[in-house]
Amino acid sequence: MNPLKSVLRRLLNACGYNLRKMTHLGLDPLNDIEQILGRSPRLIFDLGAHRGETAMAYAEKFPQATIHSFEPSPKTFAALEANVRAYSNVRPVNIAMGDTEGTRRLHLNESSATNSLLSSVPEFSDVSIAQLTRTVDEVTVAVQALDDYCRANNIQFIDLLKMDVQGFELRVLQGARRLLTEEGIALIYTEVLFESLYQGQPFFPDVYARLIDHGFQLVDLYGHARWPNQAARWCDALFVHPAALKKSA
Picture 1 (tube, rainbow, N blue to C red):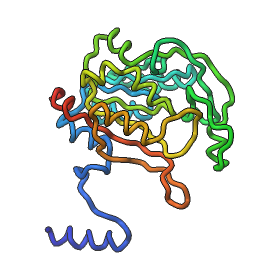
Picture 2 (picture 1 turned 45 degrees about the horizontal axis):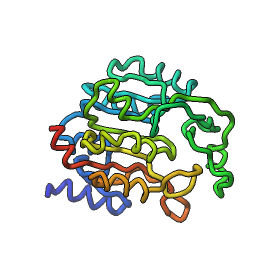
Picture 3 (picture 1 turned 135 degrees about the vertical axis):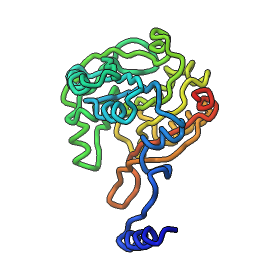
Picture 4 (picture 1 turned 30 degrees about the vertical axis):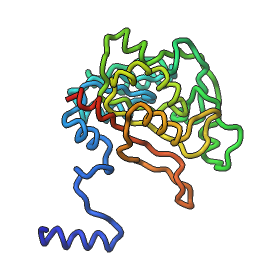
């Protein structure tokens, strides 16, 4: 080991930090996605795009990728369109993804980042979270199955499916049965919940079991939100499908 690096590592360890290369998996999901694929993604689906925060990060990190960004809320979608206007590789789509085509009521919450097709739990012990997930209005939005959208747009393979759909993860996966069965998704990056925020939501074990059944493997967990006692509340999880990954090469 380089002597200077060794000294720096000891100093950082003494201060409670750990020096690791960015190529080490588990530190940065975008770097991990590129490292696992062995290249930049060609096609990214950004479900629950909100105002484009993730879409813009993907567009800058992967400028050669085509990014379909889905956001059902009309007001939030307007902000998404404005924010990604400078990125020619981002395609905003004003629909939600689910298990079938139709319409549903979208619960518009105090914090738009918590908007959901599911109702918020009626009582929650954390007052700050309860305030953020408090429903202030509702709006009817269009919903489509991922398989139907891909069929209509002649899409056979998705390098990265990102989901931030506030408890609707299993419904989205149900609407992607063909893609999952035909090994048409290489990577899935999704928010997973360890506590109850929405009525009828799946928890991490439910999402994990469904993806494992479809041949995916867990890569790592990122961005943990924790209770004061350090118990996990929610985080993001990256899954890889080994057989689909070979197809993407």
